[in-house]
Image 1 (cartoon, helix red, strand yellow):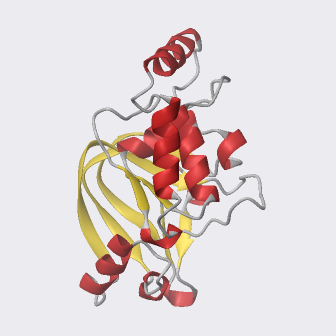
Image 2 (cartoon, rainbow, N blue to C red):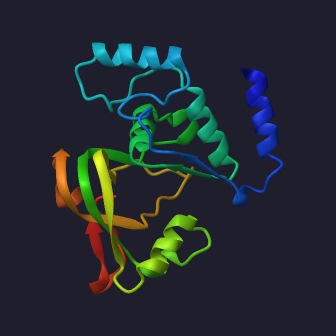
Length: 207
Protein backbone atom coordinates (compact mmCIF):
# COMPACT_ATOMS: atom_id res chain seq x y z
CA UNK A 1 0.00 0.00 0.00
CA UNK A 2 1.27 3.52 -0.77
CA UNK A 3 0.89 4.58 2.86
CA UNK A 4 3.07 1.66 4.01
CA UNK A 5 5.77 2.64 1.51
CA UNK A 6 5.68 6.27 2.63
CA UNK A 7 5.99 5.18 6.24
CA UNK A 8 8.96 2.93 5.39
CA UNK A 9 10.71 5.70 3.47
CA UNK A 10 10.17 8.16 6.34
CA UNK A 11 11.66 5.66 8.80
CA UNK A 12 14.67 5.01 6.56
CA UNK A 13 15.44 8.70 6.18
CA UNK A 14 15.80 9.03 9.95
CA UNK A 15 18.81 6.67 9.93
CA UNK A 16 22.31 7.50 8.59
CA UNK A 17 22.88 5.78 5.25
CA UNK A 18 26.12 4.15 6.38
CA UNK A 19 24.28 2.41 9.23
CA UNK A 20 21.80 0.55 7.01
CA UNK A 21 22.08 -2.53 4.78
CA UNK A 22 19.11 -3.79 2.77
CA UNK A 23 19.81 -7.50 2.33
CA UNK A 24 17.65 -9.34 -0.20
CA UNK A 25 18.31 -12.79 1.23
CA UNK A 26 18.78 -15.85 -0.94
CA UNK A 27 15.53 -17.84 -0.68
CA UNK A 28 13.23 -20.12 -2.68
CA UNK A 29 10.98 -17.15 -3.52
CA UNK A 30 13.69 -15.74 -5.79
CA UNK A 31 15.23 -17.15 -8.96
CA UNK A 32 15.11 -16.66 -12.73
CA UNK A 33 11.91 -14.65 -12.36
CA UNK A 34 10.61 -11.53 -10.65
CA UNK A 35 11.03 -10.84 -6.95
CA UNK A 36 8.08 -12.05 -4.83
CA UNK A 37 5.61 -9.61 -3.32
CA UNK A 38 3.78 -8.22 -6.36
CA UNK A 39 1.49 -10.95 -7.75
CA UNK A 40 0.25 -8.94 -10.74
CA UNK A 41 3.76 -7.93 -11.75
CA UNK A 42 5.13 -11.45 -11.26
CA UNK A 43 2.27 -13.00 -13.23
CA UNK A 44 2.77 -10.54 -16.07
CA UNK A 45 6.48 -11.23 -16.22
CA UNK A 46 5.95 -14.97 -16.29
CA UNK A 47 3.30 -14.67 -18.98
CA UNK A 48 5.60 -12.54 -21.16
CA UNK A 49 8.45 -14.94 -20.52
CA UNK A 50 6.35 -17.89 -21.71
CA UNK A 51 5.59 -16.11 -24.97
CA UNK A 52 9.24 -15.28 -25.53
CA UNK A 53 11.51 -18.04 -26.78
CA UNK A 54 14.77 -16.60 -25.48
CA UNK A 55 16.38 -17.17 -22.06
CA UNK A 56 14.41 -16.21 -18.96
CA UNK A 57 17.03 -13.64 -17.98
CA UNK A 58 16.45 -11.55 -21.11
CA UNK A 59 14.92 -8.14 -20.42
CA UNK A 60 11.13 -8.05 -20.73
CA UNK A 61 9.81 -4.53 -21.40
CA UNK A 62 7.30 -3.25 -18.87
CA UNK A 63 6.72 -1.14 -15.83
CA UNK A 64 9.40 -1.51 -13.16
CA UNK A 65 8.29 -3.32 -10.01
CA UNK A 66 8.12 -1.72 -6.54
CA UNK A 67 11.22 -3.75 -5.65
CA UNK A 68 13.27 -2.12 -8.41
CA UNK A 69 11.94 1.31 -7.46
CA UNK A 70 12.89 0.70 -3.82
CA UNK A 71 16.39 -0.57 -4.65
CA UNK A 72 16.91 2.51 -6.82
CA UNK A 73 15.71 4.77 -4.01
CA UNK A 74 18.03 3.09 -1.51
CA UNK A 75 21.12 3.21 -3.72
CA UNK A 76 20.61 6.83 -4.77
CA UNK A 77 20.28 7.64 -1.07
CA UNK A 78 23.69 6.12 -0.34
CA UNK A 79 22.41 2.97 1.40
CA UNK A 80 23.95 -0.46 0.85
CA UNK A 81 21.83 -3.05 -1.00
CA UNK A 82 22.88 -6.72 -1.06
CA UNK A 83 21.58 -9.40 -3.44
CA UNK A 84 23.14 -12.86 -3.48
CA UNK A 85 22.63 -16.21 -5.17
CA UNK A 86 18.90 -16.64 -5.90
CA UNK A 87 18.05 -12.99 -5.16
CA UNK A 88 20.79 -11.94 -7.60
CA UNK A 89 19.01 -14.02 -10.26
CA UNK A 90 15.83 -12.01 -9.63
CA UNK A 91 17.78 -8.74 -9.69
CA UNK A 92 19.29 -9.58 -13.09
CA UNK A 93 15.90 -10.72 -14.41
CA UNK A 94 14.04 -7.60 -13.24
CA UNK A 95 16.79 -5.02 -13.64
CA UNK A 96 15.37 -1.54 -14.29
CA UNK A 97 17.63 0.85 -16.20
CA UNK A 98 15.21 3.62 -15.27
CA UNK A 99 16.05 3.19 -11.57
CA UNK A 100 19.51 1.59 -11.60
CA UNK A 101 21.20 2.52 -14.86
CA UNK A 102 22.79 0.03 -17.32
CA UNK A 103 22.92 -3.55 -16.04
CA UNK A 104 26.58 -4.63 -15.52
CA UNK A 105 25.77 -8.19 -14.42
CA UNK A 106 25.60 -11.31 -16.59
CA UNK A 107 24.42 -14.74 -15.52
CA UNK A 108 26.80 -17.37 -16.92
CA UNK A 109 25.32 -20.54 -15.44
CA UNK A 110 24.74 -22.40 -12.18
CA UNK A 111 26.82 -24.50 -9.80
CA UNK A 112 26.37 -26.62 -6.69
CA UNK A 113 28.28 -28.35 -3.85
CA UNK A 114 31.04 -25.77 -3.31
CA UNK A 115 33.27 -23.17 -4.91
CA UNK A 116 36.57 -21.44 -4.14
CA UNK A 117 36.35 -17.71 -3.42
CA UNK A 118 39.62 -15.76 -3.74
CA UNK A 119 40.46 -12.15 -2.96
CA UNK A 120 43.17 -9.56 -2.43
CA UNK A 121 43.26 -8.92 1.33
CA UNK A 122 44.06 -5.22 0.83
CA UNK A 123 40.78 -4.77 -1.08
CA UNK A 124 38.76 -6.04 1.89
CA UNK A 125 40.48 -3.90 4.53
CA UNK A 126 38.28 -0.90 3.88
CA UNK A 127 35.42 0.56 5.90
CA UNK A 128 33.29 0.83 2.75
CA UNK A 129 33.48 -2.94 2.18
CA UNK A 130 30.51 -4.94 3.55
CA UNK A 131 31.19 -6.29 7.04
CA UNK A 132 30.79 -9.89 5.88
CA UNK A 133 33.70 -9.53 3.46
CA UNK A 134 35.84 -7.73 6.02
CA UNK A 135 35.36 -10.67 8.39
CA UNK A 136 36.11 -13.12 5.56
CA UNK A 137 39.38 -11.32 4.94
CA UNK A 138 40.32 -11.50 8.62
CA UNK A 139 39.50 -15.21 8.92
CA UNK A 140 41.29 -16.24 5.72
CA UNK A 141 44.08 -13.66 5.65
CA UNK A 142 46.84 -16.26 5.48
CA UNK A 143 45.51 -17.97 2.34
CA UNK A 144 43.57 -15.22 0.59
CA UNK A 145 40.79 -17.65 -0.28
CA UNK A 146 37.90 -19.61 1.20
CA UNK A 147 35.96 -22.70 0.12
CA UNK A 148 32.25 -21.95 0.34
CA UNK A 149 29.37 -24.45 0.36
CA UNK A 150 26.82 -23.96 -2.43
CA UNK A 151 23.30 -25.29 -2.77
CA UNK A 152 22.07 -26.60 -6.11
CA UNK A 153 21.30 -23.84 -8.58
CA UNK A 154 23.68 -21.26 -7.11
CA UNK A 155 24.29 -18.58 -9.72
CA UNK A 156 27.58 -18.24 -11.59
CA UNK A 157 27.80 -14.64 -12.76
CA UNK A 158 30.25 -12.01 -13.94
CA UNK A 159 30.56 -8.32 -14.69
CA UNK A 160 30.05 -7.66 -18.39
CA UNK A 161 33.42 -6.57 -19.86
CA UNK A 162 31.49 -4.78 -22.63
CA UNK A 163 29.03 -3.07 -20.29
CA UNK A 164 27.87 0.45 -21.01
CA UNK A 165 29.81 2.97 -18.93
CA UNK A 166 27.76 5.33 -16.79
CA UNK A 167 28.18 8.16 -14.30
CA UNK A 168 25.47 6.63 -12.11
CA UNK A 169 27.78 4.12 -10.42
CA UNK A 170 31.28 2.64 -10.28
CA UNK A 171 31.96 -1.11 -10.40
CA UNK A 172 34.60 -2.73 -8.19
CA UNK A 173 34.98 -6.50 -7.98
CA UNK A 174 36.19 -7.56 -4.51
CA UNK A 175 36.22 -11.36 -4.85
CA UNK A 176 36.37 -13.90 -7.67
CA UNK A 177 35.40 -17.57 -7.91
CA UNK A 178 38.38 -19.49 -9.26
CA UNK A 179 36.99 -23.02 -9.07
CA UNK A 180 33.57 -24.69 -9.00
CA UNK A 181 33.16 -28.23 -7.66
CA UNK A 182 30.24 -28.90 -9.97
CA UNK A 183 28.71 -26.78 -12.73
CA UNK A 184 25.03 -27.48 -13.42
CA UNK A 185 24.85 -25.39 -16.57
CA UNK A 186 26.65 -22.72 -18.53
CA UNK A 187 29.98 -22.21 -20.24
CA UNK A 188 32.21 -19.16 -20.33
CA UNK A 189 35.53 -18.01 -21.73
CA UNK A 190 38.41 -16.26 -20.00
CA UNK A 191 37.47 -12.88 -21.47
CA UNK A 192 34.26 -12.99 -19.40
CA UNK A 193 36.11 -13.44 -16.11
CA UNK A 194 36.90 -10.75 -13.53
CA UNK A 195 40.24 -9.86 -11.94
CA UNK A 196 41.29 -8.84 -8.44
CA UNK A 197 44.74 -7.92 -7.19
CA UNK A 198 47.65 -6.93 -9.38
CA UNK A 199 50.97 -8.20 -10.69
CA UNK A 200 51.92 -11.75 -9.76
CA UNK A 201 49.17 -11.86 -7.13
CA UNK A 202 46.34 -11.22 -9.57
CA UNK A 203 43.46 -13.70 -9.34
CA UNK A 204 41.02 -14.40 -12.15
CA UNK A 205 37.56 -15.94 -12.01
CA UNK A 206 33.83 -15.41 -12.23
CA UNK A 207 32.18 -12.91 -9.93
